[in-house]
Length: 81
Image 1: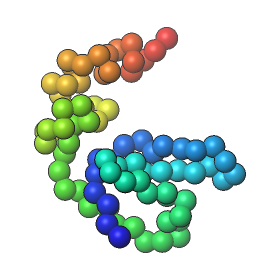
Image 2: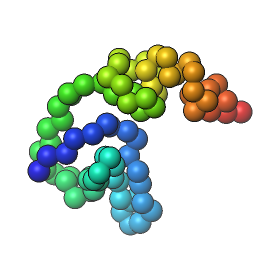
Image 3: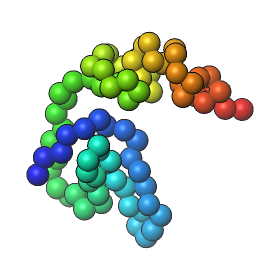
């Protein structure tokens, strides 16, 4: 089985045990079900999580221009008091 997408922080679901999911654009993968199996992860390209362009990632999944321009990467989000 093959999945393709941007690696982001895994989504979780409270339970016993806690369920972990890799969520992609059109599908998801329950990571608990693949424990003890062999996985292969292959880098294909960079992709900014804001603009979607193939640019090198600067911080937090954003390209440099998005990181400095969008409110989601603002100082108040990255370091809340």
